Figure 1 (cartoon, one colour):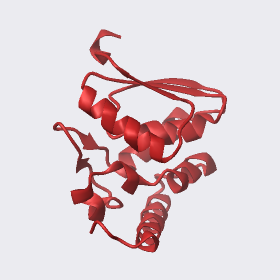
Figure 2 (cartoon, rainbow, N blue to C red):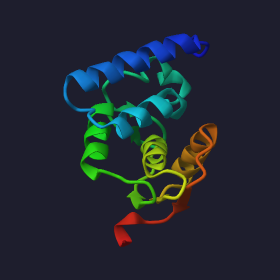
Figure 3 (cartoon, rainbow, N blue to C red):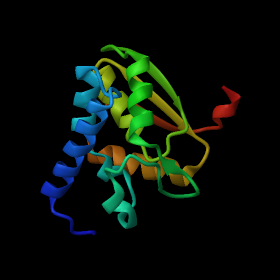
Figure 4 (tube, rainbow, N blue to C red):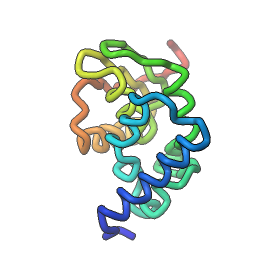
Length: 146
C-alpha cells in the first residue's frame, strides 16, 4: 500500500477519530484537533501503512511499536495540557506521541523526548520533520536514569 491515495488516509483517520469520540475516549477539542493535525501514517513504516488508522499498536523499528491510538488519546486527555507547558517524554518511539504533545502545548511549549536507541531517535526525528515540529528536542539518553 505504498501508493495509497491521500484521501484514503484522510478517510481512515476520520473513521478512527469518530470511533474514539463515540467511545468517549477523545473528548477535548485540543486533543481531537491534535489527532486531526498529526497524521499517524507519517509515523509508521512503509510495510504497515495500511494499518496506520487501526486502533492497535504497530511494530516500527528495533523492536519498538507505535502506541495504540485509544491509549494515546486517553493519556493526552488525562494530561490536560495547556499552551506553554513543558513535557518530558521518556521513550520516543516513532515520534507520533511527541508530535501530538507538540501540538497540544503550542508554539510556546516544549517537548523534550529521550530514547536510548539512536536508530529509534533518528527514525523519530525524520518523522517529526515531516510535520515540521519546532518545539521538540529529541535526545539519545537512558530514560531510566531520570
